[in-house]
Amino acid sequence: MNASGYIGRFAPSPTGQLHMGSLLAAVASWCDARHHGGEWRVRMEDLDPPREVKGASQDILATLEAFGLLWDGPVVWQSRRLTRYQDALSDLRRRSRVYPCSCTRRELAGHLVYPGHCRTGLPVGKEGRLVRFKMESGDVTWQDLILGQLSMDPLSLGDFPVLRADGFWAYQLAVVVDDMAQGITHVIRGADLLDSTPRQIQLWNALQSASNLDLASTAMPRFGHVPILENERGQKLSKQTRAKPVNAEKASEQILQVLSCLNQDTGDGELLARVREKAPVQVLKRAAELWRRIDVPSQSIESHG
Ligand code: GLU
Ligand code: ZN
Image (tube, rainbow, N blue to C red; front, side, top):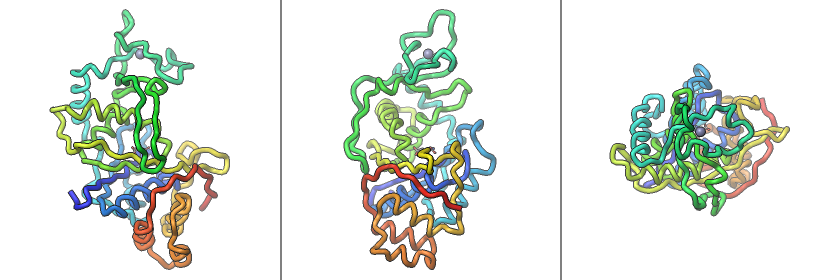
């Protein structure tokens, strides 16, 4: 543990190359960690083989290095931690916080939120296909490091899968188990994951007294959500919307571009003026010194090549 007690992380899924949206999340969490004298870990969320793109994890790591986003300690690979997720599930079962669900996609068509068909038991003659976590009622509230106090009603989210029908572990469970195991204190990530936070807070609370897990954390991480970047058509930058990968040859400029999307001070133009001459590590170092947590709305970003 470092003197600051701060441990942050970046947790990409290897479903494609880093684009400006993922770079923004990486730069924000890196700067926040470094500004506070903390550590910054990288965790590869490779739990979804059907969506995984061959070579993407190595590509992401090489890109982070090229951008000067250097991490502490070894990269954690979720695909090597499956028994941990199994242990967590066993614990949730003992506490009756999960239940089997037989519902197919077709049966749930038209429902935005899981209607709870299997909450009190499987319908007669049906078999469980997946496992869901039981959300407790009562608003989930947290003090977001960037957006301020937020509150969400679990009824608007519904019970969610922790083990999927295709047999793979769901993102929500793995994230919480790993954030706990790694002793993560600060989660700075994109606002597209805002809906996940109340789910993860409830999972965290449910798992915190689990005795069969080797958990480093004793406190819930703090959460901070940075804006989502959109393309000219107002769509979130993502693989689905064909966001272009970042360009390592323009690393310093692109870091500066995401910093300005984050409304960061660029040192009276100091970074701006000399960015072309500067290596990305130098730009980042200065950005971390000047870093401040501020709320900025989602915004559109020019396409770049
Ligand atoms: N792996 C998730 C993603 O790439 C992010 C997880 C997180 O930051 O909590 O969308
Ligand atoms: Zn069901």
